[in-house]
Amino acid sequence: MFDSLTKTFDGVRRRFAGKSKLTESNISEALREVRIALLEADVNFLVCKDFITACRTRALGSEVIKGVSPGDQFIKSIHDTLVELMGPEDPSIDWQKDSPTVVLMAGLQGSGKTTTCGKLAKKFLAEGKKPMLVAADVQRPAAIEQLKVLGQQVGVPVYAEPGESPPVICRNALEEAHTAGCDVVILDTAGRLHIDSDLMKEVSEIAKNTSPHEIFLVLDSNTGQDAVNSAKEFNETLELTGVIMTKLDSGNRGGAALSVKKVTGKPIKFIGVGEKLDNLAVFHPSRMADRILGMGDVVSLVEKAQDAIDEEDAEKAAKQLMAGTFTFVDFLKMLQMMKNMGPMKDILKMLPGMGANAAALDNVDDKEFYRSEAIIQSMTPHERVHPEILNMSRRERVARGSGVTVEQVHNLVRGFKQMRNQMKDMRKKGGMFGKMMNPMKALKKDQMKEVEKLEADGKSILGMPEFKSMRNSRGSRPGGKKKKNKRR
Image 1 (cartoon, helix red, strand yellow):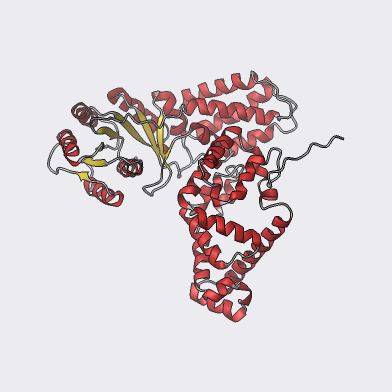
Image 2 (cartoon, rainbow, N blue to C red):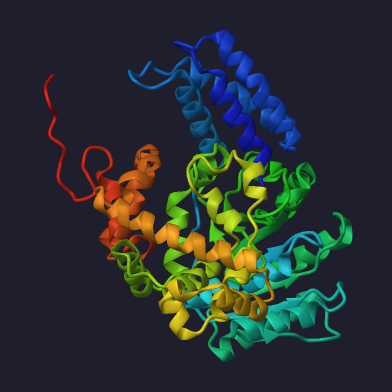
């Protein structure tokens, strides 16, 4: 998603190289490129027009900051306007104390509505709620069975009443929720291939029968302006309380994500970032703006790592790696933890500066994880601890056992040894992050505050205490000692 936009913004930043200040002329030239990129991303025309006007006003009115390049100042204007366009951040739910909280899910067919119901149920369950899913989509074949399967996977009850009308099913489901002690009821309503009177009549009757506390519209982010037009019509009928954007991990347009808040006035509450049931995230306008502009999203990366990585194992591996005692046993554990974080391409995009390098990211192959895992698992326990004994005959045996070529075994062993040696050298020269973490100096202050908050809560970033040195990168060495300013 947003790859073309990210590439355009990176080019715009380069356009200002050598310029001494922002002028009306160079701002207009840059905004012309931005306008084209937004329209190609299928951003609503009126939204695009207002966005460009706001960016121009903000850029021309920005104060000259000593030491900050005109390109960075212009991108800051774009960033602030993007946050304003997509915000404010609002993941709140109108929880009820004395009765079940009713969440009505609406949307067109194919938007991922039923899957999103399962994701939402899993999220609420993790927050200590007791959700119930309601199969009120009697139009689409197998929709009820799909929701039942999702309910089993999440571990929540699913209410279904074959042969009954959706408004009655939903009304009866509320009574069942009271009896079963469920405090959240998620209504999966029917969708259509397009907006029609029957669809609107049915969903309106369901809303009338259940008086939902939240009405979320599920939109496929790849449908561009069509999604925005649908949101406008649904909002006129139902009075939405929020939007959930799906499939933000695929496609290349994303115009709906930039347009829907402006057109409907309703906040984007959550975003779907994958097919798994835990791939539902709170929408953060500032983080999304960072990713669109190629600044990465370090805070989300940290949160993802904390969910997927065992902190004790990661911290132990980090210490062994830098001490030079890291083995293939540890490397295998690290590979498996990294796999749990999701596709490597998506992880790399969260690093500052990587978003604009789409061509390089396209060459990232997650199959390398599985290939490396198979190679290590084909080694004997002794070989994993002592890779130096891997002579040619042993490597040929490992290659046969893992179904790869001998050259691929060579590459893994060679790369492993180089990594271990480099880490030992970097440790001697002032710490692992002395060289590697220079890009973190560009980390924005608001991201840094969020990272520090996670640290204050006792959560070690990526399981590595050395990562805390990011906080000191603006004037301290990784060891925590402040640099002394030398007068010249």
